[in-house]
Structure formats: C-alpha cells, structure tokens
Image (cartoon, rainbow over all chains, first blue to last red; front, side):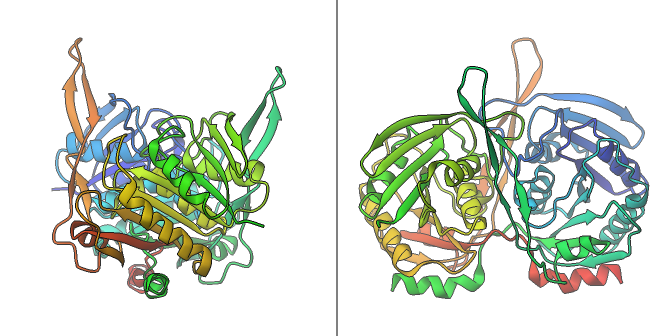
Length: 251
Length: 251
C-alpha cells in the first residue's frame, strides 16, 4: 500500500504553497488535505473550543482528497486523523508556508502548531516555509528540497517525539541543507497605536524582529547564508537544565 | 520603588482566579492587569493579526490598574508592556487558571502562552493553574503556595530564558512543592461528530487525556500524589538530542 500523507497549513486551503506541497507529496503516496478555509496565520497551537466545526469537501480524485474546515491548523490535524484519513497517516506535512517560521516564530505559527500536534499524536511530521510572503511566490527552487526531505523522512523515519521545522531561503541560489537549532530572538515594538475617526485609540499588530549575531549553529545563520534550515523540534517545553537550579528556590 | 507585577490570564478579566492572583501580587508590589475581555482558553500562543485591538480601563486604585482587551493572552502581554506598564515589569504572572495546565496542556494553554511570551521578551514569568474547572473554585489552599512562589521568584530571580509552570492540586491536603518535568501525554478522541436539525454533520471538540504511568520525576505524578508541580520551561522547541541523528538523514 502506498504511504498515506496528511497535509495542512495555516495560509488556508486555497494558498499556492499547499498546492505545491500536495503535488510533491503525491509523488510519494496517497494524500489527504485538511486545511483551514481561510488564513489562520498566527494561530499557534490554538484549538476551537467555543463552537463546533464544519467541513467542506473541496476535491476528490485518485490518490487525493482535499477538505477544508472552519477551524485552526491544530483542529485540522485532529479532525482529519480521526474522521477523514482512510488509515493512519505515515507522515503529516504542513505548509508550504508563505513566510518564515524560523527561530521564535515557531511559537506563533499555525503551520508549526499543526506539526507539533501531529508529533504529540505520535506521527512523523514536517513543516515547510519559504522566506517570501508573496501569495504568488515562485516555489520552483524550493520544491527540490521539499522532495528530498519528504523522501528522507519516509525512508529513515524520525526519532520518537521529534519533528522537523524546515525553512527555505527565497532569494539567491540555495547552497544546501543545514540541521540546526532555533536562534534566540524576539519581536519588539509589537503594536502601533492609532486613532479612529471618533477619536478613540486602537492598536494594530506590527513588530520588528530582533536577532543579534545568531550563532553559526542556528537557523537564522543558515538562512542568512543561503542554506535550507532543518530544526528538529519536540513538543516539550521543559527546561531540563533549569530543574536543579529551580529546586534551590524551594529548599 | 515597589516591584511592578504585570498579570494576565486566559479565563478573562472577570474570572475569580485572576482576582485571587491580583490580591496576592499586591502584597509584593504595584500591579497592572491586562486580561482578555472574554474567555480565551485554548488560544495557546496565538496573536490577533486580522483586526486591531481595543482596550478598556476596568479599575484604577492605588497600586492597581486593571485593563481588558479584545485580544489573546499573548496580545495582552505585548500590549501591556509597550503601552500600559508605567515601567518595565519585574515579574509577569498568568492565571490563576481554572483547570490544569500540566503536561502537554502547556501547548494549548493561553495562560502559558502569555508566560512564554513574557519569557521571550526577557521577563521573569510564572503561570499558575489549579486542578478545578469550577468558576467558583475555592482558592484558599492554593493561595499560600502562590504567595510562596511569587516571593521566591522576586527574591532569587529565574535563570535567563526560563519561566515556571505551576499547577496546584485541588482535592485533599497539599503535601508540598515538587520541581519536575512535563509528563509525556496526548489528547485522544478529540472530536465528537453530531448532526444538526438539517441533517448536516458538525464536529465538537472534546477529548480524553491519556498519560500512562508518568514517572515520579514528572508533573502528572506530582499532582496525582498531592504535590504542587513546578516545571521550568523555556521558549525553545529545539530537540538538541536529535540534531546529530537528523544530520544523518541528509548526508
């Protein structure tokens, strides 16, 4: 039986990036897509708790079933695995996201929320992003790397509880793949204060990404220097190094 | 100058848990509260990207300013730090959440999303939760532990890039504090399929928490055995142990 590959994203079911991912994944197996109806960027690991979800069948052809739902990327993974996959997926993919999910952005990203959920459920999972926000971005250079990474993960499997966060440079020739760690960074100046026509204040999300001198072992360094960054991630926030120091606070 | 303590939550500004946290924090310093107007449970690390935010002043007295906004807990932290805190906070607190945020729940939790955001911004931060969903929960036993942990963190400070996820048992006498790691767990049977009066299907979020034989070093073990669990967490998803094995996939 061909591998079953479940695909989602956070840019929505109509995004160009998810179509490129479907096409590439179909070279390797049968594909089920369950993606948000609309853009769900910045939804992180959120769940829809306050209302039920509806699902729409978008397309059904040999080896490809495409659905959309009015939930988050994490909802999509859970719902698809339980109700829309004909068997357990061999691999869960998310993306290709229009815009970077490197470094601290993994925290906010709906694309990566879906990947982390899949990992927590016990599936191999990979999130793909390209460093271009344009809805019409050209994925031709990225596609070869997406293909290579899907092939490697299907062949070798991932370690238990580990998934991959893959970011792909957009401008210039790509030099290869680097396996790295997240760079430490933060978003500053997050909100811009404005005044509405009635003179009342409101605040729009904006922000400036600050990442000073990322080490050569980090994803930011890799991307700035023309490499595809592959960061192994896991769904455990524990700072194991801090357990002993923190015990000292309560003795 | 008294310490400045910024407080948020995900149950909303009117929840009993955040009032208990305000009262306790005011014993240590000046308090600014910026909390979601309405329940924002399950919002994880999500941001409000598609519309601007509005802020409402709820209360202003000596040493206490309370605001609400129509955003997520992470929005609350960013907005408060930039526009509503008279100076940089010495400590950011989130909660007291009505319901557990132990183990894998930290991924979905808006309470902990706020804490992780505060940590990424460079502030000491602690999230508190009690193991009771009741809106009228009795916080009298929990309050002593909340006080003890706030005092310890203000006195000793936390290691860089580390915050605390504190869960407090509800039934029975509490035996003390245990510093531990997240238990590995997952939520299964996440959605219940129903049919509306027009015969169309819809799916409601539900779920069953599965955590088999958590080790004695984990938060689930601590909570089941009557201890307050304190898990040091950090905003970095990298699985450092997996970097070398994953390099093998691309050689």
